[in-house]
Image (tube, rainbow over all chains, first blue to last red; front, side, top):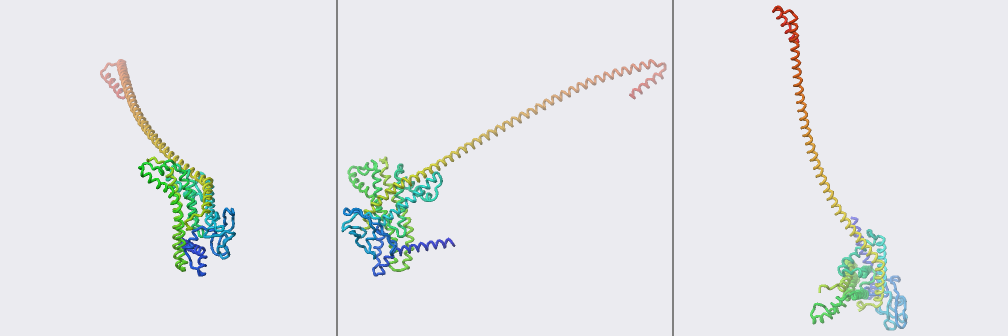
Amino acid sequence: MSVLTRKFSFLASVVALVFFVVFSSFGKASGSADGGEAFNASEVIIHHVLDDHTWHFWDGHYGTLYLPVIVHSSERGLEIFSSKNFYDEHHNVVEYNGYSLDHGHIYLNGNPVLDISITKNVAMLLINATLLIVVFLSAAKTSKRNSGKAPSGIQSFLEPIIVFVRDEVVKPNIGHHYEKYLPYLLTLFFFILFGNLLGLLPGAGNLTGNIAVTLTLAVFTFILTNISGNKAYWGHIFWTPGVPLPLRLVILPVEIVGVFTKPISLTIRLFVAITAGHIVLLSLISLAFIFQSVAVGFVSSLIVLFINLIELLVAGIQAYVFTLFTSLYIGMAIADHEHH
Amino acid sequence: MELLTPGTGLIIWQTFVFLLLVLLLSRFAWKPILSSLKEREESIKNALETAEQARAEMARIQADNEKLFKEAREERDKLLKEAREASNRMKEEAQLDAKKAADKIIDDARAAIQIEKQAALKDVRVQVAMFSLQIAERLMKKNLSSDKAQKDLVEGFINELKLN
């Protein structure tokens, strides 16, 4: 009986949390709806999944975190100022010191500048990196202390995942020389996993669902794969053995395209999977505001809870898939093609 | 589309932070964690192998023991059998010896009896002769004039004899 009660109270608190997220994220939207402006679900959703120069948690004076803007232009050099300068007290976008903000892009007197601001996603990136360092350095400390003994604490939680990545993902796909690539692949796996999970937190930014992030990771994989590529790998691309001459000329462009489709597919897969998840969650929450009904809100919150659990699964699967394909590509690049 | 155009700033930050992460984690996290994992795996493997060897050794020792036991049992049985045979043989020999000795004693006794008997008979014969001589002497001493007197005398001796 007590277990049932506990389960119910847990469920209730989760539902309450979801409601909290709804109201904190949409407070502004519903506020403007009251002011006569219609609620625009797609605008709100896209605003959430995109990067931003501010980090909006809830309405009110302290609800928004104004992140620092760092811009570089040939005219003015490097300049750092708060993104608060772009907003007046009614949260309207204004010009500041010649800089203007338009749809997340900063222009100086109408010309685009190099924007290396600490945006919401950069902040998420730094949080993710800090978390990774704290977690894994403490695990490393424990594992040094427990050398030759049974694992304990956070080490016993992380070790099975590390062993899984090593034995099920990296080793079978890369083969004998897997140890050289293991640090990169483990970092990749845990960066994506932690990023995906952090992104599911209420109010968090959509780090691993940002195409710039997934593109950068895919480019790292692309570079690593092609640097590692041996003679057999390049031979296969430029002069496929065991195929008649005319066919080789047909295969050549296909193979060259193939080299680039690999990182592109990595980029798009992770970006789409995570962003789509966020869009689905936000769309379901938006239903409450579109229908302006508490009943719809309650039902959609339950569905959101369910989708959230699926998103937890997706977070793990996408980290696994990205690492798996990276291992596969590296494995293909360094394999000895003895069977020809 | 804003969603599909990667932002330059984020790419720069991501490149920088991710490279730093790879370097830091490789040096300070993956290396110790992986080496301790490997060490533990090795030690578990070694422990298992040692246990396997110990088990094999144990089985071998047990087989040896069993063999030794079997040999010892056979040895014991053989010794017992031999001892039994030896004791039987000794018993038989002893019986034989005893019988021989007894026979000899009986023969000796018989011979002694025979000798004693011979001696006794001889003694009797001498006694009888002595009695006869005494009788003759007495007869001669007495005046054996009358028949009656002789007759009385003889009867008197005979009675004496009977009394003896």
